[in-house]
Length: 497
Image (cartoon, rainbow, N blue to C red; front, side, top):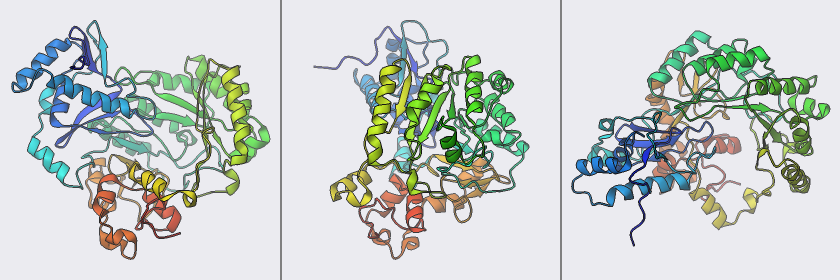
């Protein structure tokens, strides 16, 4: 029995504005506007062309007719099968912020006037060139241009958090004028994602102006801060476009990092001499005054496991309705074992989370605290280790993302040491395109066997597939063994303890 068509013939349909559809070299791609973990869908040439026909202003029956006119040998159900294949892939792997859970299409009984319109002629891709791209492990998954550039405006912060993963190096920071040139290039290259990271942008005196520059260029980012913003500061951000949806659909998020409401616990975690709690509350109220609902986010460690419920109890009456609590994970630069959430903490955590969900049913609560503590690396069975390795998410640094440090150093992982030999370019003198296409970056993401002599990687039959296609976390290897030229701890062939 044939499947029902994915879309109704009388409906108008467009590609959801949360997605970007483009041709990268000889390959169409589709990806969500997700600032934290971008999942790229690599499409076949026919899939990219089929999606490009949707403009929100044409009925589905007419879109199908156009496709069949372009491919007269196609069967009557082929178009629907192509659309269903892409839609199901998207639904199976929604992004970390949920984009994709409802599929790739936006539909309406009326024309969708603000739907994104694509030029189908841009999506005519040679099948031979596409096949050649997939045949080369160095081009199969690496993009011709990054889709996400981390804009580390400063390494400074208003606090000195015990759990911070960033190196927080002191460097000569690039002037605002050079950053403006870089942001203009991102727009020119069609790059939409440009999240500040690795420091608190507002810790630099001209940080507010930098955020305005991001907003004025319709760049998408998460504003995550521990800094105090006065009502005038928030108003400036709104005037620059903070609440203006990108591509008509995607709303930027504001995240206020608040880890405790007990003054002593807060001071200890943040490494500050005085409590910042009154400033945190005022910043929240200033955003709420303008109708912006920030996320109140807490990093939960062994030192503040009892602060989850008190944070909600303190900020709910002020108007907060979105909360996020995440578990501390080991950092390289300033780790302490006391920061781990341990098994003996779980009952206290679960009681607090259960109370929150019962007492405050109208809030949005995201947390990764109550799912238990998995086995350590040493406790994994061979089957578990093999499964985790086979299903790992490869590093996006150098494949789809790039970082620019406060001093212009180009890097691939914000948790790594941002200095030689882990720097792949210099944005003070190079363009983003020049860095992305440079030998330095290519040599880093496509290492050769000789660099791994004396390790299992050197003779591994899966070397190219593992390192050049699927990727591995070189950060984990470096943190564990002091070198990026060895397998990370999770690799089943790793022979190091």
